[in-house]
Amino acid sequence: MTASTAPVTHSSQARPPIWRNTTILKWGVQIIVLALVIAAFTFLVSQAKTNLDQKGIPVDYDWINDPANIQLGEGIDTQPNSMGRALWSGMVNTLRIAGVGILVATIIGVFVGLARLSHNWLAQKVASIYVETLRNIPVLVQILLWFAILTSLGDLTQDSGVLNDFVFLSQKGISIPRVFFADGFYQWLFLLLVFGVGIHFVRKRLQRKQDLEGGDKHIGLISFGLWVLAAAIAWPANPIMSWVGSIFDAIADVWGSIPETLMQLILTAIAVGAAVIWIRRFLESRRTPAGLAKLTDDDWFRMIFAGIAALIAALFIWILWPGLSSWIINSGRDFFEFLGNKFGGERGSLPLDAMKPTLSEGRFVNYGPTGLTMSVFFASLFFGLVFYTSSFIAEIVRGGVLAVPPGQSEAAAAVGLSRMQSLRKVVLPQAFRVIMPPLGNQYLNLTKNTSLAIAVGYSDVVQVGQSLYNKNNQTLAVFGIWMTFFLACSLTTSLVVNIINRRLEIVER
Image 1 (cartoon, one colour):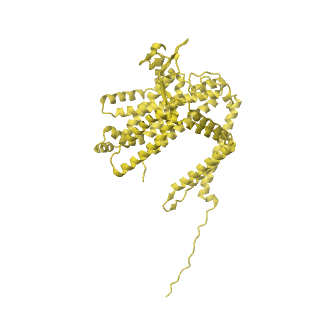
Image 2: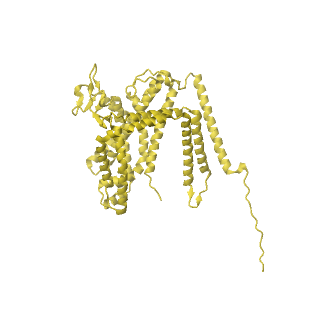
Image 3: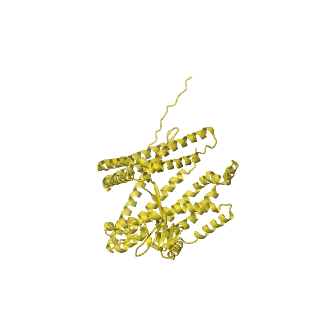
């Protein structure tokens, strides 16, 4: 008996027409919308420029190289020869107050936040009063209050010193001892890094031994002791590293002889290589044990965008800013020459040194150059920002510690850890996962609040910019510089905080 077999038919699915293809429609709509946005932005900018020109309001940046004819109260250049140099000095002053303020506010905030959780009644109440008082007083009020307090101090005289003349307080500011890098610092630091390679291998060996044998090998304590010993040995022995200066001088000569075309090719290769590496890693992240997973339209869009970004970078290097390669060559040569000068053979063997504040006699008594001096304008802004921001940081720290489940502390106590060990090894590492995002917001707030320096006359970028547009009537151009500067500060701060936040994430298997 033979079975009848039916003919096998193969059905083929017809491709939809272009106007019904979802992939083409999706990409087409995105491209059209992007083109419309760019066209609208270009039209609005041209219209705004036309209207401003009709009203006699100039918007250009040709004034950057014009003479400033102003004197700044403090900074890297108190008598800038150009308006661009004046703005740069104001930016440095802003970064100085923001950087130091973030560091000090974080330290104070962590200690106050932990004090609010202390079992000590006095520490808890003092910390609570600190937080509840300072965070409810507007920061501008606090800055003006500190300005009033500091300006009410007495005149600067020889009797203004306290603590055996280690600190001077007067209406001209505060001066304290200054610790600075001496001639042998870079030689000492380089020798310390050489010792650090050996310490790294010792730490790795102790870690492997602890993993195999168990127990506590006191890795942290031994590493700290080795670093202290290395620093003590390198302190008098640092002059032996003076030969490193000749290496940096040779690198400076080689770097300065690089042709501009070659530097452009190198920069282009870096841009293309970065795009290729990103695409490869992206594809690896989409790979499954069965092979490469099916890529969606968004995945293809990301890879194409990476390639377009590399192409834009190449156009920027070759066409939009061809002088970038020359600037990198000259700046790199100057940098290596600077390092070479720091390793001179005639330098002393003292890495660090300190000086007490002194006074300069003349028609008026002023602070000398030996101490670390804070003007009354810097000090009032610094104290106001630090104490205001630290009160919020303290609450963030307290909330982060309370977010850790109580069972973690109970488990740490069960294995014999003290309260301090539990806090340092168990609670805080988990709390910082909660603390970092809002902590980054406080860093951004402190940086933006530096613009209140204009209330006390501190020469930050806002105060300097206001002085400049009062002279050249370039208000919008100066506002554009302000926006770009603070945007760069915000993006940089967010980038650093996000990197730290990713390092603290729980790694899932």
